[in-house]
Image 1 (cartoon, protein in one colour):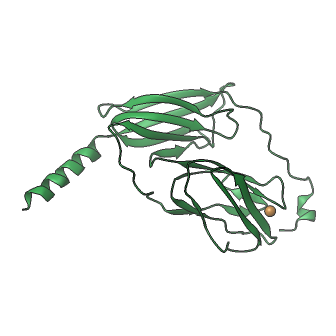
Image 2: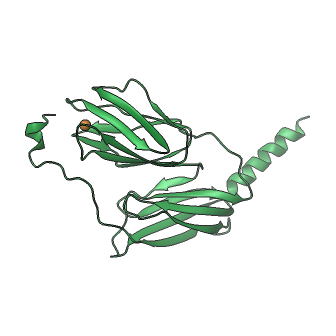
Length: 213
Ligand SMILES: [Cu+2]
């Protein structure tokens, strides 16, 4: 009777041991390190059961008339809250196909969180301050990471064959390829992304006067 649980524990331990690091380094066409890129790995083989997100909620704050962070990566099924840390009101919305919603003018905590229940890219804006923008990358896998200023993202995944995808706000289309992760050695991957110019709307020069926060 105790055998089965023991086997299950051994199997779980073996699967954990089989996890391997996948280290990605991203540069652009000029050789500059690329931050705010989301790397995701969806396992193709062996098939992976659908799992609920490890973190079911996170937040994107509004501070100094900006959304922070600029890019957020989440697994499908995660809720995001949008607290307003400014003295002025914000009107948060999205018209994206993967999630369209609206949080009419408010201060402080948002009355409700938004559940992101479909994979895709969701662009978040503020109706009052046109330059405020944030992106939510909703991925159908528990394996994802965002690059920091060093252009690096490391994922720890069980060995197997994966569909790798990279998204970044200035990438014309996501970069995708198949990779095989072995548990015998870490995987190091380098990517050169062809990035478009940054088309973000600039803030007004005297915004502190017009928008006292
Ligand atoms: Cu605003």
